[in-house]
Amino acid sequence: MPIYRCNQCGFVSEDAQTPVNAQTACGRCGTPSRVYGTVFFVEELVKRLAAATRELHALRPAAPGPAPQAPEVQPATAAAPAARQALANVPGLATAEQHAPLKAWFAARQIEVQLDPAHVDTSGFFDDAALLLGSNQALFAELIERVRFAYRKSHSWINLELATLAQKDAQAINQLCRRLYEHTFFARYHYQKPEKIVRLTLQPATAIRQFFEGGWLEWYALMTLLGQASGHAGGVSCARSAKVVFPNEDLHELDVIALPAGQEPICIECKSGEFRRDIDKYLRLKKRLGLERGRFVICSAELTDEQAAGLSAMYELSFVNLQTLGPHVQKLMSS
Image 1 (cartoon, one colour):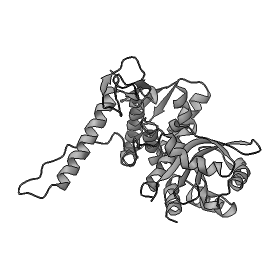
Image 2 (spheres, rainbow, N blue to C red; image 1 turned 90 degrees about the vertical axis):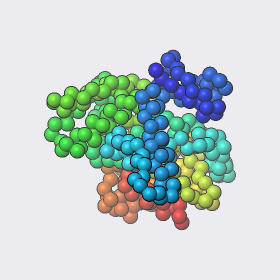
Image 3 (cartoon, helix red, strand yellow; image 1 turned 90 degrees about the horizontal axis):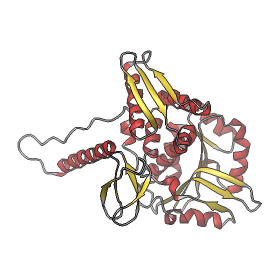
Image 4 (tube, one colour; image 1 turned 60 degrees about the horizontal axis):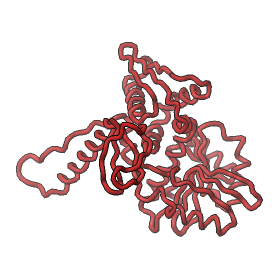
């Protein structure tokens, strides 16, 4: 049965009426709380217990005799090490106060900005799933494209044939699909072991469709940026899917934008498909925002390092891929 834990008062309760990953009012204090599947909730508790046990043992002074062993928890997928780097449940991120510095920056330039705290709410699974996909995008790219294509064609299911892949790659894809199913990104998951076929029923929820159609890359960029900003003095104000309205009423949407304390904003436009026809639009937008070349970033999962470097030399924009995004942001933060 689905379960929730209130972050405000700590109350834990089952909830059979609310769908998994939706929010319900706490039965004790009324604070909105996210509902989790029981299996996933227990898995996360076991992981945290294991991590705390390992940390405790590391802090204890050495003693004669064999040291006690922390419980071993196997990663859910081959991409789990990257997922463990996620800043899960970042406190105070999904609040108006966190957005205040960004709003002030735009207001000082007579630009109206609309920021939705829900778009940076990391208490759900979108950030975790994005890190899983992005950690081995070369291997998982076909899965993402197959799902996107199925949604566009109004298909309700896809089959993945893994028999021709290396055993390690097939296992990683199968484990990823099972993990995404546990997080409700698929309505059904079945692995046909003899034939090595993964059968997936798509989740009809709009939020899931938007995630596979490009939202995953926005979440990946946001979490990468937050990871680089975790030690930045003064903190960082950040937003996803920010809508800006210029004085002439032109409307634009910024995929990911962050304002490190004492610096100018960093704007990241995330492109999971064709972007070359939009280069001129981004050049004009960068100029209107008054940002330097390095702080207006085009992140494309399809670019090689050489292509990204070449495009960055041709245009007054910075082009990166998933591997070079982190180092680029780190360089900006430290400047």
